[in-house]
Image 1 (cartoon, rainbow, N blue to C red):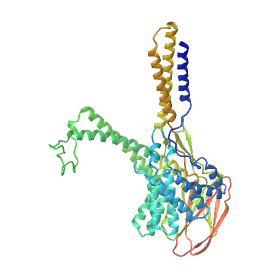
Image 2: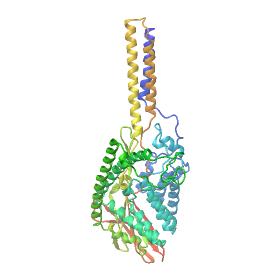
Image 3: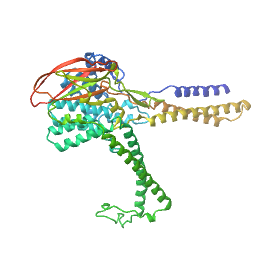
Image 4: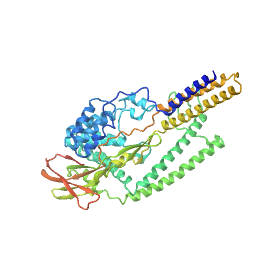
Length: 527
């Protein structure tokens, strides 16, 4: 009897041990798809070495499944077709991705499961990071502009600005300079001079904020504004409580002061600070002093920012709102940003800069033999946009799930140790007195073991891994050259600037035909 008891407890603990140590799969899994983000990486590699036909056929097949990665497959197809010069097909794919990326309700059931403690970020539908939505809108806007559809082109550009914006302070607005410049150009072509000027001014400010001489200042200002907002919120909470206590009520429970209708307040209420308790008043004064100090620091930093900005040349922006510059040459350079996982459980999504892939660092143009370098263009640093939103650094950490996994794993180990202690005590008592009643110890041991199993299952089912799906076929950066060309045929040569070469390699060349009173948008990808 004694040995049988020992064996049963030992077997149960072995089961608990394996549950704690081996990962469990969630009971509810998505239907398996032939194409996953990991399995398509080889297709992306083929694209970058210039082999696009097999990538197109595979991605086209993937889009027929209309699964959670539908927008991602279409974005990648759009990039491939654009590189091949098939603009109509590229626009079709970008639009299909666009509708899903901006549809809040689409795949809603996947969103709900993904945000749960046991869900996985990769379960949800791919709808893109802010920079990917902005890039999708940029391509659609440019392609529609090439077709002459100014109204829808402008709507897409505005959507891109909105995607890159953030509501936490003035400096968190979109810093996607080219989007503002294109909006200014389109508004001017549509005859809206006031709106055009507003977008132009916004483009200049965005250019100032992310300029190298201002980047550190902007970082400090955004941090200071963030802490200031936190202090202001705490002060507001205290004052709201005081208002509720001090405002007299009438018989039906509505405020007497400023009341027009039941429950409607149309006049501000002044707090009587003489009736506020000393301890509360000390807090209020402390918060107000903190706000004044932070405002003074922010004002000083903004003054320094303005002084720096006054030295930055943005004269080349004028070409974007000068309608004589009737051609936009869009040169895509390098390899777009990559995402990897970091952290104990892979809960951090980290963006890597892959822009120097292949050694191409920049682009130049020869237009009918006349040189156009980067100073004649507006640059879009895609990796910078991926790492920031409105100039604020992005940090994608699933801290909640990671902490939950750690806590439950620790709890499982603690319960297992407690179960072992109960078993050992029961065995010691029976060794000294074979007739002793150890039922309570056995019951306690079983309870602790069950708790260990439950905690281990919770820990193993939690999936804090960050979602690292991304639009892998984006370029590292884009150069947009505004050019003024007369009607007729013109020769354009695109030069590849390599980091280890002093001379520019003009391998890519093509001819374009310009028609009177018709703007052109030309795309060229350097692979």
